Length: 410
Image 1 (tube, rainbow, N blue to C red):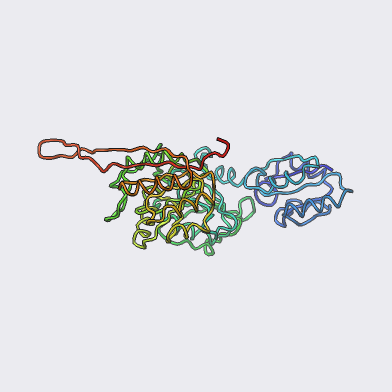
Image 2: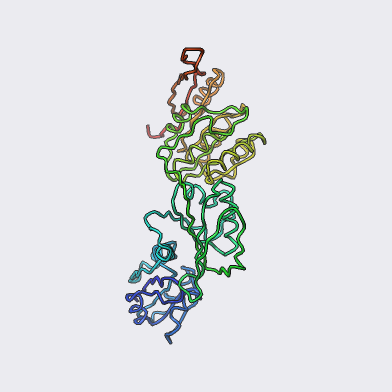
């Protein structure tokens, strides 16, 4: 059996490509969700109304009488499509992929927006899991345009609230409703007021392009100390912060715990390394928790999750870390390090200390848990005007420990 995975484009079939139409002419059966099957309503052929990949495979396996089957998928099969899972399950069949027009390219084309300047994110699907929620504000912060798929028109106001919380008040939201259908519409709104989707007759499926007139496009993003909201809370200073993040060696898909987050300076700057990094800022003091949230919002870092609790208990239900920064342990360093190593034996840990007794505590942990370590001591000084003179004022020396579990083969 030959199985065609067909991207039907936008709407009810009027944007079908010639290649897609030819494959549909050859098909003996059409398979897809109800909305997709509308594109094949002119045909008098059997249909199987289903979108779950495993059930589609079961159906094909039990219907060997078909020579050609057409699975109809919305938009383009390469863009947030179920085609990927289908290709994995249908390896025993001859699978032919037929691309379609995506909602992404369709909307950009309709609005005259350069697709090369647009970043992608999908907010489609269940986004209620706090620990795995999808981020968009950090992408909007850094991009001229950001395209997003939504679940329902009501999600527009949730998006407006989120953008406002992260100080993205100047953004314009372009809204595409039922693109490709006879009743398609395009409208726009701002972030400073709620949007009445019902009055504007916005219906699903709905997509948005968020336009940011002043995106932050810095490379090697580094924030000065006086830019953080701080009060009197101790903070990792900018030079030490830069070195500490360098020692972490974060990657685009890293999961970082910032334990004893304080002001959130490490969490914020680490989150700026990549849109895809997930940072969990753990802070037990309520007033500091509020401070971390203020800085998270100020710098548009919605890839930071805030945890108000004490480590190691607060770490129990968090996703497995790839990296951990410990700025404060509350005298429970051994428990914390042991906990994160049990969650991921390959985790990389960076610990900063100023007091010598704190450094001794880290050395004890290294010995007891048989860890590999790199230790550097950093002395910095900053200039200060004293009368007619520029004087260098020394800062407290800081010990930066980088720890990981020894390779058992070494």
